[in-house]
Image: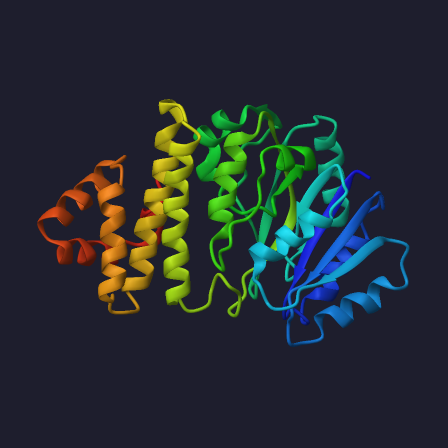
Length: 322
């Protein structure tokens, strides 16, 4: 079987039918669908099963014993997958069936470890295409791709299709995070890939929802998960003995995530003594890779309160460096 599509499901009854139907309309049914029931409180699973029971698609529904979050749900799906390639789809989004089929078959010929495509944002006001990485197909070594195109590629995994053996041989699974699991997984996967093929085909439709994980209140759980992400990235650099040529790309990503994390959280809440302590731990570890970050770190050694005030005034668009 060429492809396993892994679909974690949790409280998406408004959107699940469109998602499932977009999968069923893929012209070639040489794939399996693995639905992971993450113990939602609505009728999402029933809706999905009612649609699937009248099809000849190979599928299975795996139910968690308790709600575990998106990262663990993806890991559960991965354990049960048998396809040559793995695709993680979010159940409130959907794909263009024909374009996905074209994209995958074109990428499959390359036998690359990771295939990357493009996507659209879906808002109440309409559909907006995201900027392409490039206007042509290309294949690169993973570390080179990460250094050159990571800022354009981003962390989202639903624009990626992964070779199953690549994930297995590199023991690539999702860390136990409720938030920002893609930000921790994607850099590791991209760096470890021997080959990455990019195809400028926009097949994915990402919904901007007011009640999604990405738009909910920036709570304490998200604050600590983001700190875990930046520390995991630093640990990865150290453990993998990454060449100095590529270290800066990882430090840039970790530092940008760190600064955005503080800004987003501190704008909403007064930082507790424990939160201040966690931030200062990372400041000690932090590698200043851009002049702005260097100045902020330098300021923090003089006045930590001044550091926080400066950071909370930064806009998110200024926190992602090339």
